[in-house]
Image 1 (cartoon, rainbow, N blue to C red):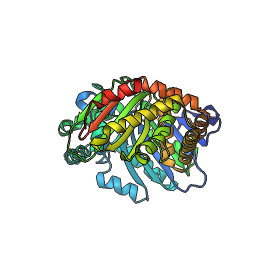
Image 2 (image 1 turned 135 degrees about the vertical axis):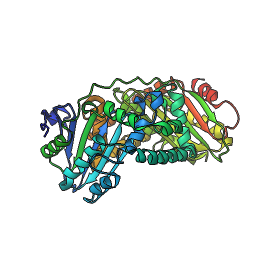
Image 3 (image 1 turned 180 degrees about the vertical axis):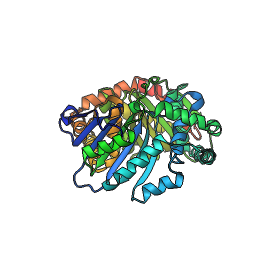
Image 4 (image 1 turned 90 degrees about the horizontal axis):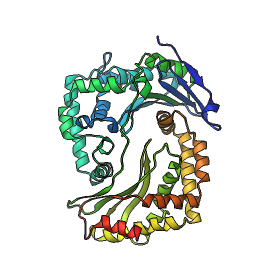
Length: 437
């Protein structure tokens, strides 16, 4: 049996107003974090691995996602059905997802079944065998997933946006990869991916809910304590470029993605840009929703949001717009952004702060959301920012901060992708002229 823990990090070293949070470091360097939430009967557990599509070389784009699918298809001890049965017969459920910068495996369970859940979780992550027949079967499943994505104009728009914003680099390539890769990937590729990336230094195991800290850490150590330490991860920095892409297709609506680069989550100014996206288009009373839909009826739905990674981020506007309305739509979006550069209305500032505060507070009522937030912090900078800390930061952001962020935003070249009919004119050039006139 592996040794339990190397040391425990006191809560005060992580935050001044943390929930009942503990972090531990196993002898092999793997980080364990746990939060005990009073009033909960269940617990959420996740293993988060610092590998995603941005870590893939061009010939293997899509392997993180393929691996995540195949992890549930059989191990040395269990076939695919036994993996599902062993976790479900104790009332738990298990799932996974792949992102640009991490892969996650997670489950929700009654705490008395924690040993079973962690045993299955470790089995799928560490001991998958990738049977040949299962690879062929899952190859067809993922090809169908790619087919579904290629029929969805919104999915096409987002993939093309990333490719245009971050061209010729791993960060811009799609998480699913290409059909060519999916048809060619083999068992040796999957085994090498596991050997190279599923190591202790790149993994965080988090439990949130009804649990005991020391017992949870001991149980994780039994399953992961002998995981190889690894040699660290060196990532290619994301390089924003931007530009314009139009895929002309005969859809009734044109799917629009318009965005600008913002600092990454590791940057102290990230919370300001995150709040700026919420202020611009988060909710029915937001300036963008009011100007685009309520005042002019240019779109059924329009949103603005911010996505952040460790070294980069994007503030993006999305909508579905009739081709004849595109020119006016872009004029309205530009005018709302320019208005934010000058000033922020007091009502909008109050609304946005409170929306963000409510969202952060609710994470304490959603164990898996909290587990994901903790894991992201630990994978990024080995320090947990608690909901209370984030709330305090949000409440301290001023109207001046947001206007300054808007001006910084518009100093960068935009990325614009249209999927559908494009209407008249060069929209990308028109946006740049209007913002800089």
